[in-house]
Amino acid sequence: MADKAELRRIEIFADLPEDQLDWFLSQTHELRVKAGDMYSRQGDPADFMFIVLEGQIQARGEIGGETIVFAINQGDITGVLPFSRMKQFTINMRAMTDSRILQYPVAKFQDLVQRMPELTHRLVGMMSDRIRETTRIEQQRDRLAALGKLSAGLAHELNNPASAARRATSQLRDVMKKIKEASHNLGRRVLTVEQKAEIEKLETSLAQVDTPPPDPLTISDLEEQIDSLLRAHDLNDLWMLSGEMARRGVQPAIIASLFTTLDVETARAALVRIAASLEIASLLNEIEGSTTRISDLVRAIKEYTYMDQSPVQNVDIVRSLENTLTIMNHKLKRGVDVKRDYEKIPLLVDSFGSELNQVWTNLIDNAIDAMEGKGVLRVRTCRQDGWVMVEIGDSGPGIPPDVEAHIFEPFFTTKKVGEGTGLGLDTVQRIVKKHRGNIQLDSAPGDTRFQVWLPLAAEAPAKS
Image 1 (spheres, one colour):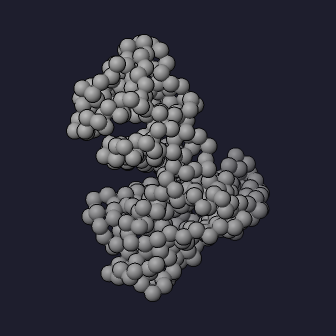
Image 2 (cartoon, helix red, strand yellow):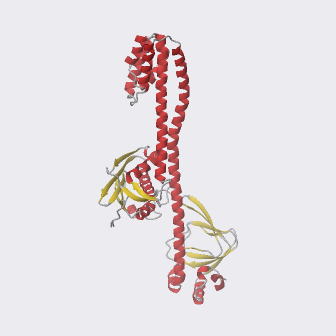
Image 3 (cartoon, one colour):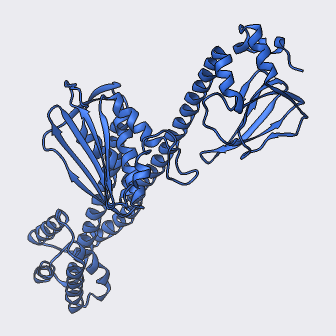
């Protein structure tokens, strides 16, 4: 049987009075568990605190969609602690070795508080430490999950322009061969200085056109007219050039002008080279657009994470929001229409690194999820006295009043098991408070709004 000497080997019992230890032992029940036997199962009533006197217990369960395994060793105290609200055990516990366990019933916690206040205080402190550690682990898991989602989206966003640039580069090699052959064929023709100048002028003017492509109906009409013009001069094999020229908005009259100064075969060679030049211009524009998109994403990532920058600095709120929207574009473009309403003058706040971007990311991500990926996302900023207000709203179904009352509580979530830890809005609130601000919620079906109030830089008024 357990005795006082065994209890004193456990730190929180070491200096307690003899009579208190005697009383505590009289209220407990010692249990022996053989190696391999189950000590407790998930779902069993949580009706005791227990101390491992000898042996080792393995705990295994699922939290937040992840399986966790840890050891409960000799001298460890766990189970239900004073003032805990746990009603059922959430994990399975199995003895890894022959073990002796001392159980104290939850029903006698009130007596424990009265008879052993110092032990109660220590047990509550132990529970607080465990809550903090559990919260830290959950927050880390939440951040890693969010990072994983952002990374996957960014990989997709970067891959699209990179693939487009690679594809255009590959096509460019083939077109370069075409223009080389066309130039060689044209070079074999006897041309006057005026004819050469006319061809070069036409080629340069068409290649430098940088206007949006015509609408599909106009392209179709142009292609048909150009094709008819070429066929009228027995250039039936150049039908593929019609589409490229039509997409660039080339007018049939320009092509017809070639046939007034050149013979048919020379005009053919000139048209092939001009078409190749147009295709090269299109491919270069595509490469430039793709690499610009990659550059913009990299810039947004650096600004989003405040890479290579000081931890505390003035941050332009609108730029911060736009960087977040750029980072989350992979989720927005599936069916979310973003409506912006920004204050015209810059609004600067003192920010701790990328923490405010975490706030925008959480609120925007929740809004997209609430709308199931389709709807209107509203992003608004305004200035009021010494404060900046950032409002993020959505056209989703709204938040029911019974849920709204708990929305900022740690570990509260309406998402399915494994889809969320319930730390998103708790994290948002803590970050906002760290920046001396506050967050408010107003929700109705079709109109949910989160308003974040932050003091403007160099101003720190007290807002109730």
